[in-house]
Length: 438
Image (cartoon, rainbow, N blue to C red; front, side, top):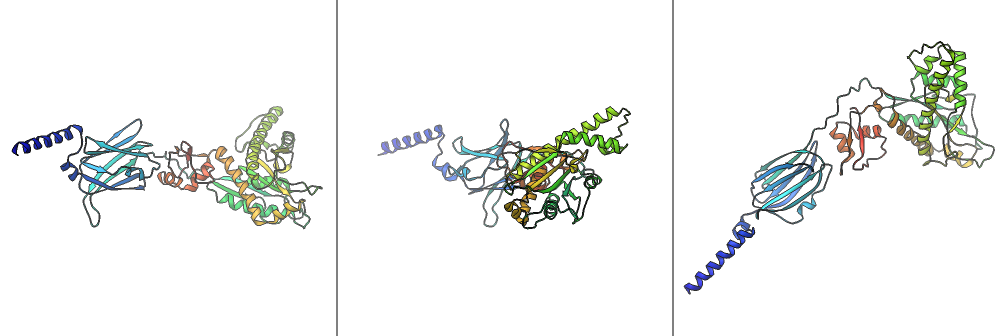
């Protein structure tokens, strides 16, 4: 009997030895291992916190790896249910989490990251209903915007010109709708939408039912240092079937005639074209060339903004002319102000007259025009304006949200939307967005 007992003990010792060599935990080790019961994640200002709920105390170590960025957490004599890390959601910092057994009885958790972080960890002792907890904080690398003073930056000024007015009713629809009334109503709605946009301010050439000469409209835009002029109209045509919206910019012929008129009427025409920059040129031909160049540049900008308006108006109404048209409208002849004339619809068309009388439709038209303006200035805001300055640029990472980015740079989501002409909070990984001056 003693012989068989010794043989059994030898076999048991051999099994224990094999278990140690193969890296499998022994029965005693398995009983003493700490278990991860849950993993909780929270997003804070500037860092991500992960809390591991544990069945007991744990020894752990932490280190970082680069290219690609990773943080590695080793927990000695610890085990975790397979797939637990898969329940932790990815976000703008964490690309994913992996786990595995190391040295037979240790748990290794690898955090794959989008960017470099500073990791910190500590263990909390049981308190109240909570047991042992391992806390891991992943602090984002500081990405501070350069300091730019906002006090010297100005708003973009948009002059909104409601066509006709006073003794000039403009077109009249079959139901008696007057163009001057419709254009003023849309102008007031557009003013509110533009003023709601950070970095933009609207001015009306007329605020009530009054008559203004075309040159007075330009003068009011210039007196307000407008960066853009939008003239609102409602078309009319003998055939009531004609319908749709159109955009007009100044033609080259119109620009040339305006150059000649300015030079003939005003010895100080250079002030109108170049602001406070003195153009001391005696040669008349050289002056004409300079003025033509200035007007040509203004026309190019007018065609650009007109294209943006047309693109957004397509969602509101049928487009009568599929591209920006050019004509010698007097109201477009502001020499150094990009200007467009918007024919919102045909009052002579019964269906479009009904739409133009609708407050809901007017709001849609105003919103479409505002979006076109925003898209244009997001690309071509004048120097010295809030919309032209960016504290920095940021590349969107997978899982980023607009509110998180805004919080990171101490600004607001609405400011970021305005600076980048975003109309929703949807972002795409890899997208470059400009961070506005706070």
